[in-house]
Image 1 (tube, rainbow, N blue to C red):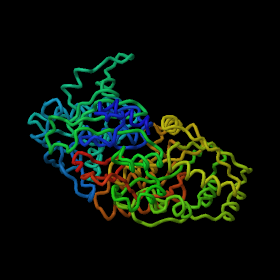
Image 2 (image 1 turned 180 degrees about the vertical axis):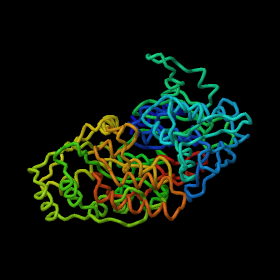
Image 3 (image 1 turned 90 degrees about the horizontal axis):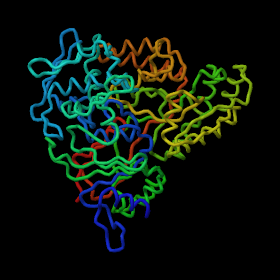
Length: 535
């Protein structure tokens, strides 16, 4: 704990006691413990790691958002209102005249134009979120533009469910930057192209309109954000947010009990249980769309359909939920979370059946033992889940070589599909079923490595009919028909895909009892701290 207190003191310039230790977190600072060693950028045009999104959501704002308590309610943020053309392809937004950036500059349609365009022009690994609308470097200037009357126009390639388009614009990728400021810091790439301010925004600077601004990021250690003095909404209740890398649940619990942190984002079930009855600590429960799964890279010839099916019967889902999860997770074996359109179908066909799994292995003709390189993040609960799965799969002749690594290599191995199995989580980028359905069910023949965000291709799977159903569903205007398409797609996906969905998170976040106003998001890392105060 001494090292942690020293880090806080250095980062915050905190007032020290006579003994040189911090007695408690400063009253004007919210200290949040989480696992943030996976972050590689804070530029909203390329950020996608869990901790990076959590930080960027406090700094940048989108055109529209949604109510976490009821995501069907889409609300304006930087856009005051919007209309959709009769053919469903053109979305026209009237900008909010009250909105302004941390620089004091007003938020205009030109800023929206620049921000959305730069996502496509930078062409990072998350550009697919907007590119899925048919946007590319050749047409983005025509399709994404500020109109003469100060409105912002966003054109898509075909008619989609309108809510789908709006949800995408609400995502962290839709964070609007101050174009006047960022343009001053554009640099030339080695290739001779424009970096659109990426190097400037990547690690040390911010240019948003949210309640906080970036002050300091020490990679794999901490992120410090300070109140935006020009924030156009209700001023934040605390002056600073301090996001501290602290992945271990027990360490977070001890720090929370001592008052060294205000929020513990990664408490495991045992530590959640141990703080019950502590009057100084409260537990906030929220609806979570995060799901835990492991993906099988079917490029490995040993991972035939029969072997994949056997592995699905070789997992003790309920046992893990009961003994490791202890009320923090529920068994969930489909690609869309409960709470979303198309979710809640309660299709969980797999349970631990060693004999059936052995029979399937025998039918496959694949020789045992089958040894699979399995990459796992060294942050709970992933090692615990992986070890439990390893124990039961060993009984059917499948040996998992667990390679437990830091967040950086964990994501690198995943993105390069340099593995047989990847244990991880999935949190939707926006609260529409297509966020999950496209990732896990869509097949793009032009992208065999899944660099555009299609995990089906990343794990080497041609999803066939599932892909057809997914693409029909995202265009369907009738809500009931769209739901029916997702129902069919999910059942087929669960039966045939190389993804072993295990659990949906039942989120519980522990915090000091004097912390008020935290809003837990439903998409990953969408917690909102702008209204937080400390009594």
